[in-house]
Length: 496
Image (cartoon, rainbow, N blue to C red):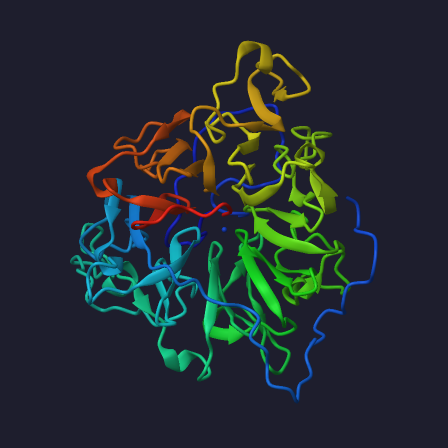
């Protein structure tokens, strides 16, 4: 994922021209992400499920395991959270502000990576943010007058970073009503969200459409809010159990297994037909026509879900087959407007899903990791055999004969059993059940943590002194940086 602002833009991989016409935009971001399920009708958008007179019921519990947080990649806009003086890390580096062995540090229990910012939940119920705040994604004031300026009055490029952005810091408690207990955070390109114990959702930042217009939601008077600089409740959502973000859209899963979507919909990533006449109607959460869902995830411009029958569904952008539908992939402006099953994943017992700009990954209960979508940047981490590359049912090439798309979910070899997977815009990080990490894909900013900036086509083990003796259990991938987390003296559970 990436943040598209006039001030800061992430470098994109240069893959050269091809015969493929893709719907997803190159940087700057869209100039910055079945058929309808049968069965009972979904609740009306905006309807509150609970009795307003009753005390809200606790339905979510926060994580309790405190994590050591390690970062790597490019942080010239504060993405690494290592303070104003550190702008890059070629290998994983322990973030001292989030070191569980330091009594003065913040004690993080859950993390989410956006395009150029990160959001974390702490053991003592604080929402901590760092990185780019150009569009309000940090949810707190970061104006800083300490930057060095040249003779023309412009900030010096080589000066220290804004410490209010480059240092992990809590959103003031006064930004939230008293008594809220948070259980999960999520992050997109320029937006952030937090889920409460009673199933309410708070959000801040903005969504950007392909024309660069900012829209986030509505205020109490029904007026469009372009940019929400501080946390505010997301109306129309209740009894939510999980949240997920794409680049410019969000999903929420409620206790009844209904998926709600809102944000930008230019690549059909919301998976539903909008009822109103204007694009702003997409800012109101509405139900996706899929039933009995138990898990949701997002790619930049597509969405993924697992239902209670262990079927995987996908919708949104499919120009590189990232939504798992082979027909038409690579032939033009391809989207799946409504959820469709990914047939190759049926019966695989998928427990974890992740998506990047043009690729996706799934982890099964037995530790197999399957990947599909764009492959020409090494995103999938597989050295396909010549026979496989010639198999038109598995690999699709461009008009010059260059392999571009893996059409079928394919196991990643050579990395052992996988516990968790994270997809950045064009790179992937795998966490194994042994607590190690592998990385593959685009690496121009060192976001693979391998000590160099060469792109990688086959998944490689991430090494470093900071990893010695650590059991890794999680990874997050932004546009030009990555985050991994470890817990001590514990083995990963059986699911992501």
